Image 1 (cartoon, one colour):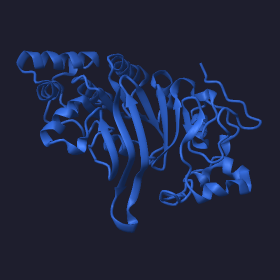
Image 2: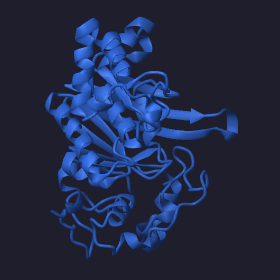
Image 3: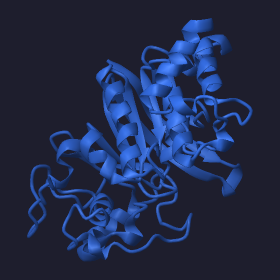
Image 4: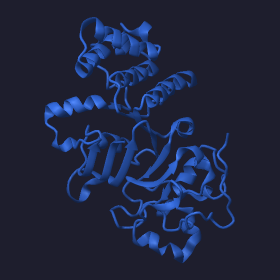
Length: 334
């Protein structure tokens, strides 16, 4: 069952010729119990996609379906009820907690609003959620008295409490030490086992390896690759994905080493849909292709099948099932 389906999502900030396009025709589908990792560098559109998909900041164009619901057509009351099933963990935990409430009061309110619990039942639900994040001893503390890691764990506990169908977690492990990161990821795994789907927005590829069923790579507001998470390193990739893997030391450095630093924002080439590949100024594959890269300048590549379960948006990608000449796919490290 599909719990989230996004089609042709676009998001623009501002008006007229100076408007900035943060999303450019993004499609995303997430099934029940699936963990989808959305990765890319800062400014690639990851957070904007998460907020648009949950209508925290609605898209400028495109369609969103929450199961069989269209959030654009819901009344305010129906939308509020639907939000119990679709939860967002914000990237900034400092701004997403009420400074006047204790941790317990935050979660009691969540239990009351989303689960309809009252009194002792709401208190028990709140304390259980805090205990699963090892925060029960801090239940009476206010946000100002918490560490950054404790705030982040509190926002995850609050999102998991209503037992949602989908969680969009924006950098849920950022700034956490290894032990706490493991605890937070363990709670997400437990939610997946209970058939909660997770969209994991992250720049930390270390998160992808144990968790993600599917990896969605974004660049300049577009999806440039989709690939199963379990064998990421054993495939030929979009040059940008290869550069990300090389930066994480999961792929040998030859090849993507030629990837150049980003150009200033708005000057990457292919700024609008149909104007060419946005990655062209940084692409080692295009630099080596010479005149064969003309199509990269003329039009933006569409996602197309490259291998079973994998789609890549690259005019110069090798034919499906055939590795690049002189290059064997690098095994995924164990």
